Length: 354
Image 1 (cartoon, one colour):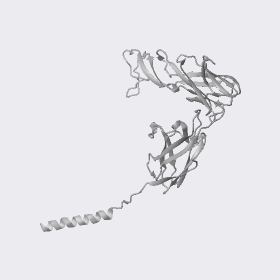
Image 2: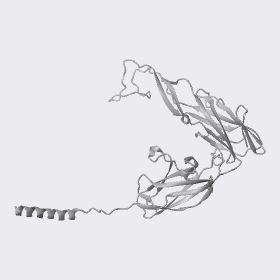
Image 3: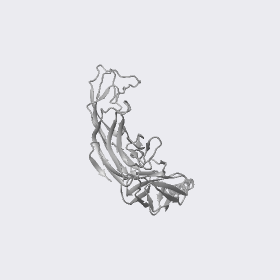
Image 4: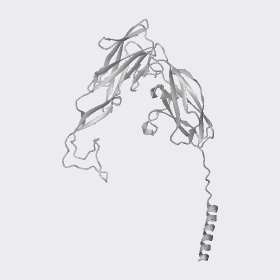
């Protein structure tokens, strides 16, 4: 019995030596790279200007280092962007897993330092100096951590000039119904596409199903394209964006422009260029609905007013892409006297005076 015990003990000792000799695994723990916000170029700027942020990496890493920049006070995503101001970076979205409240900042592989720009954007608002505050946090691949302070802040003063500013908005989630004519003798899905069997063939139905009433929902930005312009000045916007904007700093050749208005009377005109629910041949809209709009009229940073029209346009309004000028409506009259604005609505009612 003692012999058996000694034999088992010897086998265990031998196995332990063998295990130690065969294990070549490196169990050294690799710490993450540490990134420091080394410098913020400016502590105070004016709308339309940029701040350069310098990041340093303690140990360059073989992969990109991903961070997310979020504004936590002073404004929102509409007030800034990052990257080259002429070709700014895209915002993060819920679809990419980062949420819709910031921008991705990526330090290239093997970089020991990296700079990026935060660009403040000019708006039409009349406002005082604001403090923009951002938080920088690691995200996605988590190859690095922020060392020390992760807050970036600077003051942004209001930008002012005498250029006219226009902003046309029509974003709204519209719920509506369509009539779908099911006159086919093959099986269709809810989108009107043929359902195929395992062999890729259509599936016959003995009797066509009854016509259907389907509930739909869309943002009107995806349905309507509006343009806007002044009748007697070089102020216009027809970029295809929603909202449409004509103001200082947004000029796109042959798409939008603004200028200082000389004394005189000007009409602000909105044009419904297209309306498209993307209905199929066997679908039609049941009833109709209004397309509400809001027009903001401003002198950049100095004066601003707005007029809302809940039912100036409808789903059945004839559009200018079909018949030139048919979608045009006067939404405001601006009288400029001594450089000062007086704004009236489309019925001649006084709205605001500078």
